[in-house]
Amino acid sequence: MDGLIVLASMRAGVNPAQEATVTDMLSHFCTLRIPHPGRRWQLMEMSRAVETHNIKPAIDDRVFNFQEAREAVEYFESMKHFGKVCIQIVKDEACRS
Image (cartoon, rainbow, N blue to C red; front, top):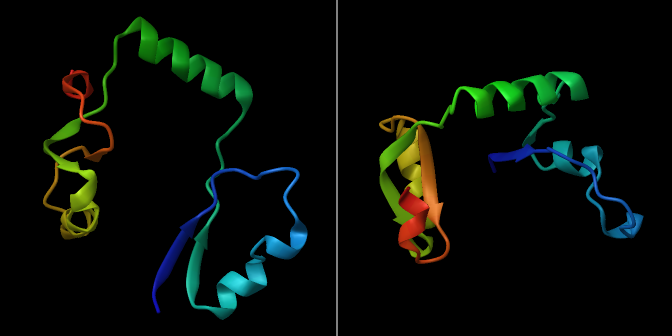
């Protein structure tokens, strides 16, 4: 087994018996990464800079549909992409703008 878990937030009000613990994750050979988002003022400052300078993320030319999710992960892992690898959930032309 080779799992990767990125814990980006915590949920409240969940039955503790149903929650996976760090011990559960480590005993099943998972890698646990907990990103530190930084301070609130740093996020606000970054958000203002992104909006002020009209900064857009780099998105790879190839956009996968939902049925190609496994292929998208393989493409991401191959490191042949430039920018973000996107999986389109809803068929909408506005997603590419």
